[in-house]
Image (cartoon, rainbow, N blue to C red; front, side, top):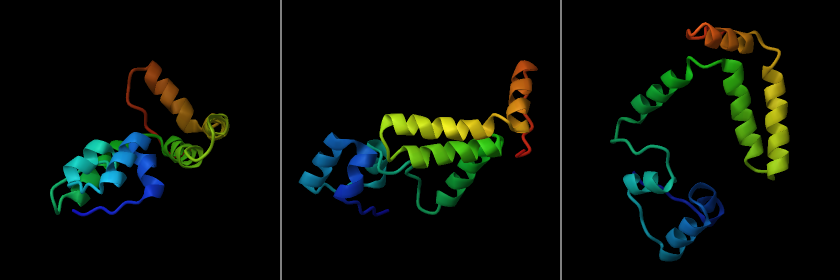
Length: 121
């Protein structure tokens, strides 16, 4: 597997110190090394990416769809701003989860020590 990266995004994924090392040395990384430094989430054998994606999707599926959607939005929007703005974005996203039936279902399921049955409501 080949991965091409650039100065603009390398430090975002690896941290400044590791980005400098990789860029200044022009070091080539195999998929396992790219996973180790954080350039990719998973290094899987060729032809297994789809199966790995399905495995991750199966882990996400039981979670509340509204909560997952709002978490995704908070991460995407909050990752490019200062900490105070990021917290404001996170709070705004959470405020959209608070009035949902899924949130109540999660709390009740926790209290009853059972798995929640989310419906996206």
